Length: 402
Image 1: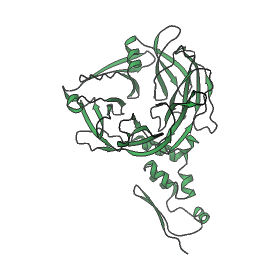
Image 2: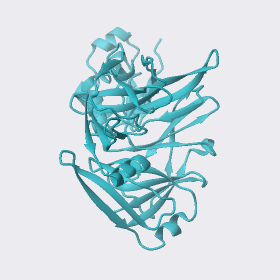
Image 3: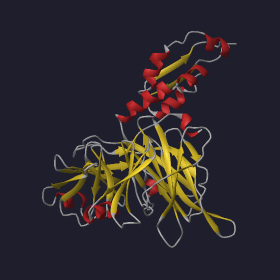
Image 4: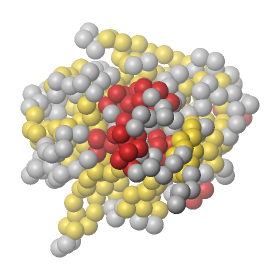
C-alpha cells in the first residue's frame, strides 16, 4: 500500500518524499538535491527551519550537522542580527527574538518578537550575559536544604532550544562571577570564572576557565599576576574580555584585558574619569574597539563616548554627539528608558517597557536622528524585567552544548 506523500515546507523550501521505498534504500540512493546545494540553501534559512530540515532524513540530519554548514550558517546569520529578549514568568525563563532594524527611520514598521524556548527556573536572583556568538549564560541563585543557597550557571542557545548546566566551580570563595567569551581564531567559546576571597572583601581569589564543546566539561585553574577586585561587568570584543577593576596592591584604577585564546591577563592603567565611566557607565563595542558610555536619565540632547584607540600606549579618544534641541523629548517624552547597547552601525539603542506596545528607540549618531520603533509579541512579559540584548545571531551548532 502506497504511503501518502509527506511534505515539509519552511521559508520557501519544499522537500518531498515521492514514494514509500524503505528507509535504507532511500538513504543509499542519490539525493534529489546535491549536498553542496542543500548546504547552501539551508544556510539561508532561519534556525527553526533548519531544525525542521534535520527531521527530513538521516542524510539531511548528518549533512546539517557538518561543521562546514554550521560555519556557513553563522556567517550568514551575522549579516541579519536580531534582538534577543528574555524574562522570567511562572517558574520559567522565556526567550524571544525579533529582527534588528537596520538604519530605521520614522517610516519603519513595528517589529514582532518570536518565541524561542523556555527554561525551568527556580532561582531567587538572576543575571544574563550578553549574547556571545548566539549563546547566553544565565547565572542565578537557588535555595538548597538547610537554609543555604548555591549559584547555578546555565549556558543557553535560544536558536536550538538547548541548555547546559555547567559543573560547579571548585572554590572556597563566597561568590563566583562568570563571563562568556569567544575566541575568533580557534573558534572556541569559553567561560571565565572568578571567585571572591571572602565575604568581607571584594578581592578576587582565583581564576578558572572552561571550554565549551569539549564533551567532558571541567574547570581549569589559570594564573593572573594582577591582584584585583572582583569585577561587576565585562564585554567581549574580538577575542578579548574587558572589565574595570582596582589593583589591590597599588590602588591603581585599570581596565583588565583577558585574551580568550591565550588565557592571559594584562591591564591598562586609566585616569579617574575613564575609570568612573567604566565603573558607573556601560562597556560597549564601538567599531570593534572598547567604548565607555555614561547614560544620564536627564538626557540633554548630547552623547559623550570614550573609545580605546590603542591599548598599548594606551590612547583614548572622546566623541561628543549633539542632537537637535527637544528631539529626545518629542520622541520619548518623560517615559523611563533603559540603555541597551550600540549596534554595529553605531546606533545607540534604548528600551521603553512601560509603553504598550513596548518600544525600542534608536539614536543614530551619524545622522543625528532619534526613531521610536514599536515592538509586539512581549505582552506576556508586561511589568516584568525584560533582558534585552543586541546583535544576537542564530547559532545552529548542536555540538556546543552536548
